[in-house]
Structures are given as C-alpha cells and as structure tokens.
Image 1 (tube, one colour):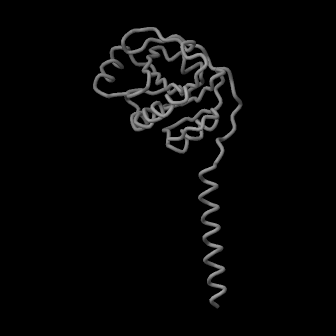
Image 2 (cartoon, rainbow, N blue to C red; image 1 turned 180 degrees about the horizontal axis):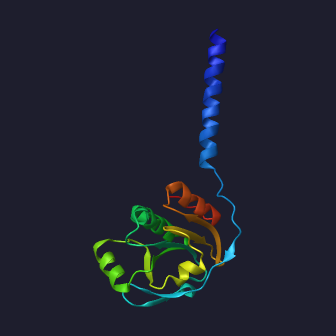
Image 3 (tube, helix red, strand yellow; image 1 turned 45 degrees about the vertical axis):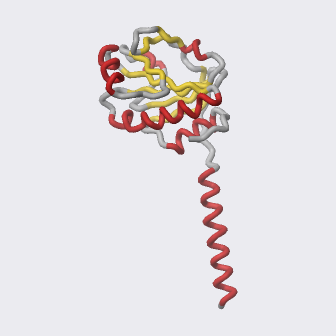
Length: 173
C-alpha cells in the first residue's frame, strides 16, 4: 500500500509539473502575416508621426478609445510592455479611434499613457484599413514591417507574451 501511495504522489507531481510547463511554453495562435499598413497621424501635441519613423523596429499597434473600459484596463499593461520593449527595440503606439484631437489631448493630460506614443485617428481610416471589428484591438508588427500576431479584446500578460513570442523577442512581461 505504501508503494502505491508513493507512486500516486510522484505521478501527480509529474502531471502537475507537465501541465504548468505546457502553459508557460504555449505558442501563439497562428495567423497569416500581412504587410503593416503605412500611416501618418498626429500625436497629442499635433506633431505628425509616420509608421516609417519606426522602420527596423518591432511595434505594438493598439487601437483604443476614451469611452472603452477594457481599453482603459489594459493601459498599464501596454505601459509595461513599452518599458520592457525599449530594451529590445520594441515601440508601443496607441491609436485613438474616432475621437477629436482635443478630446484625446484632454484625456491624456489627466491619464498617463506612460511609455506609449499616443496618436489620433479622427476619421477611423487606419482602424478600417486594419479591419478592426471592436476595441481594443492590438497588432504585433515585426522589424520587417509584417503584422505577425493580433488580438481583439483586452490584453493579458499571457496574450502580450504570445505577441512577444510571435515577434521572436526574448523579453517577457
């Protein structure tokens, strides 16, 4: 009886360890990579920023709005992602969807977006080109300018790390 108990304990420990390891090493879901869509938008100071300004860098491109609760919830994670990413040439760009420059500027004066570059897409054209179907929406774009991972909904650590894996970056948040 004692041998059976030891066997069960060891077996349980091995299965538990395997389950944890599998979770940690989970590969990101496959998506067909596509060429990132070039853009020129204004930041909150009115300065024009182009996607070409980030040539050779990996980019997290996030679409959000001030009225979107899940967008607000994920902002601290996007800030962490930006701080971690700076070490490996990753930039975080958050593009406001269909709100005025004045609205976004007032919002950012009251709410820190940390390390992210805040851009304004008043017309929603860029979101339409990316076929954004809801907010928040996030695209992970590699240094060759290819969108290799996307997610619709609020980011979590696991989803962000999947995006980093898809970019083939070794950093994790």
